[in-house]
Image (tube, rainbow, N blue to C red; front, side, top):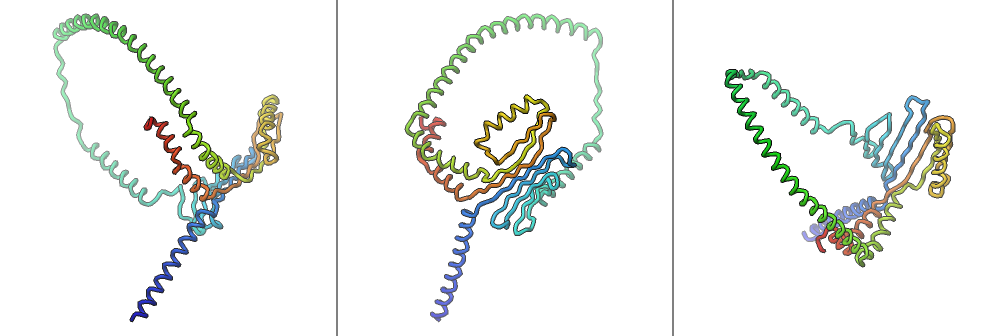
Length: 297
């Protein structure tokens, strides 16, 4: 009997170990296997579709993928194990049912309102003499009331000029005090410590997200040789950053923008989690956020 219980416990322990191992492997895959993205753009005015674009995101040997292509498939399509599980152009069944119910209810309400007979109202008009006397009395009273309202409004405006000047001065003082307060925060040791720890993490995260490969050739013409020359001047300024990855072909005669562009990169969740962990649990940054919100002034 004891041997049977031991064997059962042994089997259960092995099953738990296997499940824990599978869970650990999945966590490691999610953290360290990068999400890859590709963006392809093509433009040519002579073709039927002058602009074509394709964006694809894949993870773990295309087990999970998301694709958007224009104009062929102008919707987001998500696949799991090469099977489409979501399409943005097809709403879920629950939403479709709710929309049908709402349409039916609106149609029923509209039908009920059409069936109700309109209410008949009889207008009783006073006699002409009574109308004339009433209008005369009303005109005299309104003239007296207008004179009183004019002097009241004038006094009210004169009083408000003083209050508006005082309010403007108070706002200027408040703005100056706020500027001094935030300058003191930027000069504080708390800001320096938070910046020295968090800024390398955030900049490193952006650097890892930026595309690792950019290739393209673009033909640009503004229709004016001077304008095209200015575009080339900007390209010359950006050349140290772009390098030989993107080739600009000028056209000094036509107004044209066409060419091909290919962008490729990857994102690792471990980098995101690491940056979020360091930034979130930084005491100096938390205290700095409270100071910026004036909670711990």
